[in-house]
Amino acid sequence: MLAPTVLPLGIPSPSESVWQLGPFPLRAYALAILAGIAVALWIARRRWAERGGDPETVIEIAFWAVPFGIVGGRIYHVVSSPDAYWGPDGDPIKALFIWQGGLGIWGAIAFGAVGAWIGCRRQGVRFAPFADTLAPALLVAQAIGRLGNWFNQELFGAPTTLPWGLEIDPAAPTFPDGLPADTLFHPTFLYEMLWNLAAAALLVYLDRRFRLGHGRVFWLYVLLYSVGRLWIELLRIDPAEQVLGLRLNVWTSIVVALGGLIAFVLVGRRHPGRETTLLLDPAAADEEQNAAERTR
Image (cartoon, rainbow, N blue to C red; front, side, top):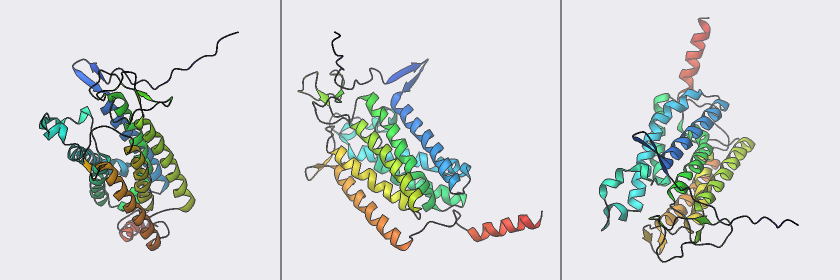
C-alpha cells in the first residue's frame, strides 16, 4: 500500500529578484509594475471601446496618467516610510531608487488622477466615464504589481501557522529579528492579489448590471480597495509610521473608504443613470459629424 503524499507546508519565496541581461539588470519589481500597466491598458481599451470611445484615446491619456502615478506613488511611500531615507541610518538618495520597491497606491491614484484629468482635457473626453472605464483595470494592475513584493520578500504579514504561510529567507534584510528561521508569515501580497481580482470582477458585473456612470464605478473601486487594504494592512509587520497606535496606511484606508462611500452615494443621487456621451463638447462633435455627412 502506497503511503499518502504529504504536501509541503508554506509558500516559498523566489530565490532571485534581479537577473542580469548583459550589463542591464532586470528587476522583478519593475517587470511586475510594467506588466500590470500593460494589462490595465488592454482592459481599459476594451472597456472604452464598449462605451463607444476610441481605444487609442486610452493610450494618449496614459502618457499623462502613468508618469504622474509613479511620481505620486513614490512620494507617498517616502512620506509614509521616511526612516529608510531620512532616519539615522537612512540614505536620502535612495528615495529616487523606485526599482528597489516602494510605491504607495494612495499617492499613485491621487497623482495619476491628476495626470488622467489633464489627458482627458487634451483629448476632449469627460474624466468621469474614463475613470469608470479604468477602475477595474486598476485593480488588475495592482494585483499583478503585488508579485513584485513577493519577489522582493517584503511587505508580508505577521507570523502564522496556516498551511499557506509565506517562507522568507532568514538571511533577507526584511526577515524580522528574533524569530526562528523556519517562521512562516501571512502572504499579504497574495491576499491583496485575490481581493483585487475579486473586486475587479465585481465592478465589471455591477457596471454592466446597473449601468453605473458619472464616476460611480471609480468611487466603488475606491471603497472596495480601501476596505481590503484595511484588513490586510492590519496584518503587516513591516516598519511604518504610526498614528495613535495604528499604521498610517490603516488610517488612510479608513478615511479613503468613507470618502469613496459618501461620493458613491451622493453621485448616485444626483446622477442615477449613465452618461449619454463621452465627449466634453458633444454639440461640437455632432456639428462636425453633420458637416462631414453633408460633404459626402
